[in-house]
Image (cartoon, rainbow, N blue to C red; front, side, top):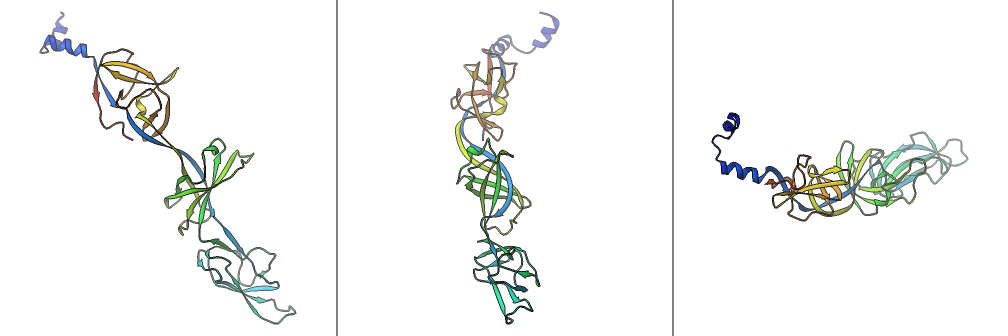
Length: 288
């Protein structure tokens, strides 16, 4: 034994050194755990009225004399929105007429002004959001349209407001040939804070898959696909594993692992098949 080797080995009994060498290097492992992962589709679009009612006068030859509501006002069915007067010079006696809301809801837009001429065939005077209900009209890539279905829950991030929960109400049966995107409508309810025309993003939950869960750092990607390194009887085993969904830094393992298997926490090329190691369990790193 050289002087350097003797110095390094000083104070460590020979049997202890031999046992340490036989036990192998220490590696951090986690237990494979069963967990459920949510499959999601991210979409974006603008807020629109779920149902919009256009308000026009039911008489010709009149001018707006008074407007009684403003944009954003809550109105009842039959409530007077504006008053009209016959245009001077028309061969008819002077009289006043009322324009009423055809449905209960919210005044989305006023499209006239005092003094303006209005008619049954002209542009609408008001647009009423029926029931005040709005929804997100979202564009969806054609490759993801097959996953979207009526009734799926969605989390909508509205600019300036944060997250609002909704649900898919309709899915278009068509794909735009120019944009290669389809459309879906996601209900937002009657939240008065959400304005028509607002841009928003949504995450739609399209399904759930349950399987084994390990940290993404435990996956090695090679020519034959993803693999994990499992410690069994203090030996390293390399197992090919088909992977699924990702969530919170963990990955779904669809085959190849059983609950409780000890998986190397940070797999790497420094470990090879059959290497003797000493597993050090990390209890909290594989949680979803």
